[in-house]
Image (tube, rainbow, N blue to C red; front, top):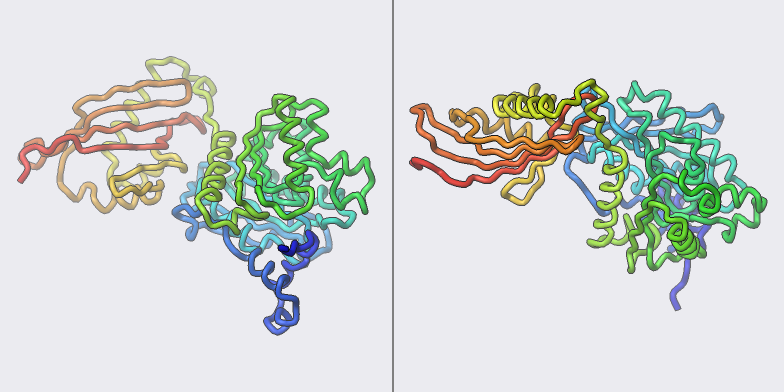
Length: 435
């Protein structure tokens, strides 16, 4: 029979990572194994994670506990005038001296979201499952959110576009944003997270009223329209008692209440499948969560907000921007202003170039080939805050001979009071006068 590790041991064991080797060797094998697991990174990677800037050990609350600190992960391609949405990660229950923000799972999540265009926020808080700690943990979570918003300008954060992403016993903290009091929290994410703690081991330490207050399922019985869009990652083989049960009951009730949520189930997933199950389903769920965050956090600013609401003027603006882009190949400063931070450029090798990679590629090959480029045709369409430009670029040599014809599609969004390119695709359709 397979031995199940008690839930408290999962969190108790995390302290081993900070212990000297000699001390680790004196601990039971299952504890050492759990310590190894928590330091493992998430199984999904994106370009630029190694270039993320990390601001460490920020004191975000007035507590005397020296371990209650915060790290902020900044995108590698951040520009001075661009504010990014923030993803605030809420770890599960553990003593603060174990410094969960330093675990491999959260440091890699911080880098993952920062390289994906957000500002990542990890912090150690006082939630300690199953000790009496829900109120104290909530105090720290609120303080962390307040700190992020108060220092938004310093770290180039859009303080009105925040996602709370909770894990395991951190699930109850999602309830803080389910009553409509945090309109700046645009979406919620729960990975193998308690959605109801009224049947958990917290019953031994917390009052029934407190358990109800901190159970996300409670807010389905209130005004469910106040609950932000929610993404739930479920581990089909979660070994934590009552974890899947709490998620399943929440999902069933959420369907009845017609709540906007996305459920991603990993049939073979263990607790912490995002760093334990190194398989395509884990990566698919992680990518799904990133897409969910992007859909709900990276929202364009309506063109009317800038005083420009004329269709022809907007199309003219897109045409001008496209012309500027054609002339800016190799000009890093110009491309920085044209391309959005989440720009993606699929290329023939099967890779997807980020903004920084596209600029680097452009500097290497353009205009070193000495070809002159012009548009053979240009078709501009606008759908509200999205612009699509199709066209043909003709390249000619110094003798004026046309040597290459490329068909392309560029996608723009209107945000931060300007159009920004977020995608570019191109194919060479014919070569002329080939040497």
